[in-house]
Length: 232
Image (cartoon, rainbow, N blue to C red):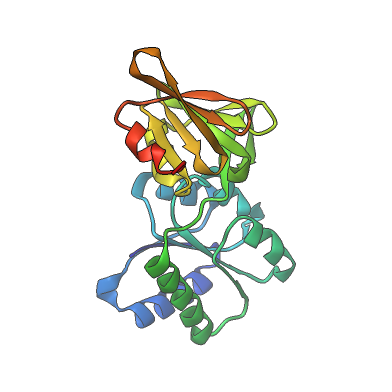
């Protein structure tokens, strides 16, 4: 398991690391530590992780900034913070657990049990997609996305309110991260199966998928048989 601790107090970071190694064993962990938002984001993007222990006050910086910048990555997050009033916000970001400081090894064990239980049942459920623009990051709820259209190395998110926003990840990358309800219906399209309405047969052996929103999307020839199962 690739684990990252983002904590600016070396004593607390060492305590978390000691507890984790004691509970999981040295052969089951590849553990790293960072003490700032920027270093944590860089490590996640360059190395990839399975589990994040995150403090919310990093030398005066907001730890939630880490989650905003890497929200489309797939890993579990356990927040460890003295700011218990931020617990509700943390769970809105999709964190798996919130541990209040000070903490004992038993509380870390409980959190790790949740990680293993979730890993055994399913992958983390992505709740938001981060869209960057004009120096800001906007969090788009996955539930607002009807379908995704590939646009080179980028993707266009088509939302339920009729707007379209550009995402800086490719369609292939988003296909790995989005919930199972999103299906690849064409080499250039992902669509949420909860909004499938009808399949239309066109001339020349072509097919289109109608969504409940009224959108008509092309269906790849190799995808037609699989999609039919939604309607029979």
